[in-house]
Image (cartoon, helix red, strand yellow):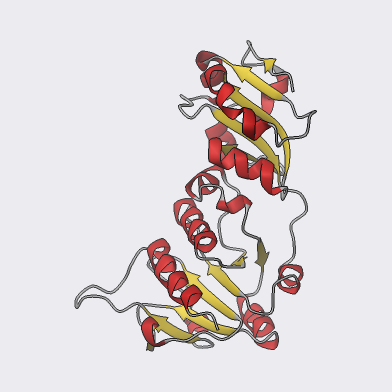
Length: 267
């Protein structure tokens, strides 16, 4: 592919990259921004999401040859100096590697569940509104072999730029879908034969004593409030026992411990 040089920050061909931080808040109408070399590689190699274009610093182009060879031959690759790229983005782009991806049609929770193997470990998120936590949980889910992440409607967008970056591209790799009714979703998982553990500081069972079923759903809630009481009442609750006088972890850290435990205890 022949790189296309951009010399004017207002060039309409790179309009999707303008004022990145402001657009993060306003939304991108079905698009998302992938940032960094590792994330670009996952975007182009996974085939899960489409790619509209790539924008890179001129001095980073040579190091991306192997990654860009994975892209369709007609994918526009724009190249700019540091000054021009910073003017486009609205801040200093020290990574110097951006791409615009397409979200496509969201997969339904039911369709995702239908596609999972007989022995599946899934993560169910309720109220995760912090993009750092979302990205970290997705990274942990990928690292410990979770088969999917399901999230309720109050969770933040897993394809938000910061969430993708914190996930180190796992958001582009691990399957995810959303559901609207938590109580209804627990009933759906029950019908499908899933054991369901809710992680809570006040959980009845120490996580070290919990054993997973062939199919397991692990529930994680927002920091501070945790999972809703109505949901905790419906599910088996597990805790990560800590030192006396200290009762909770960051939800991302808790997810890593729990996922490691249950992935290591697959039947």
